[in-house]
Amino acid sequence: MRVSSSSGNFNDKRTECTNYQSSATLAVITSSVINRWYYEFIRAWGSVDRSYFIGAMKTHNGYPFYQYYWFWYVDSSLLSYTNWMSGQPDNSAGYENANHMLYDQNGKWNDIADYQSSYGLCQYNPVDLTPTPSPTFAPTIFCPSGYTPVSGLSGCYKYQSTPMNWFEAEKSCNIAGGHLTSITSSSEDNGLYQYYVVALNYYDFWIGGNDISSDGRWSWIDGSSWSYTNWRTGEPSSYIYVELCVNGLQSSGYFGWADSSCAIEKPSLCKYAGGGLVSSPGRHIENSIFCFVNF
Image (cartoon, rainbow, N blue to C red; front, side):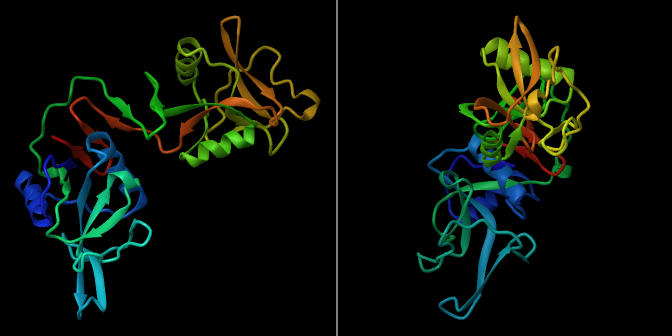
């Protein structure tokens, strides 16, 4: 994927994509997941005051647009997924037959005339590229807004400092696309301990463990396997059968888990449910479907 550094009309940006690579096109977006990938990319490498042409166009029968159809110009297929802003498309300029993604509207779409000016958002086919040596630098994690990568771990995390009960904390994590964190290995446990407890001095916060559904049968709220534990000595205590939720505690330099009443208000730690996308200093973001590049 590539974002242009200069603005132009729709045909300018379409040509710019093919000049970069013969099979490249303006972006084709067929699902909310792909739309999120593109939006996170322009958040990372774009500019808040810009919009970006994507590959959707409008055709029509009759005037003024009694019938019209939005399609992807690359293969003339009709749009099966859309992410229009509220009230769009509205054809306000009288002949808005192109489409652009807006940075400042969280990746929502708006119709625009093809002769108007915008930036370009290109996608290309990685198989057409000349192979290059693998980078020698270590990859980092590209996380959604509000989430932070933790060194040595593959996930994205967010500390919520506002005290909430366990259920409110989980709901707050859900809003940003995550859950209260699961901890499924000693390396993840130690990585979170080093970052949040040692470096930032956060402790006694909610994590995603619970035995709400069946007393004594512990599970993670995000569905991860309950295959690793780090209970403190004497825990879980299940005190008077109301301690159904798990929090992480630090005591005398030791970080471990304890069960507590879910109604107690504590800070909390979220993990992004979708995981991070791998990003390198060379501005590549790779996943199983696309290889994105920006120059």
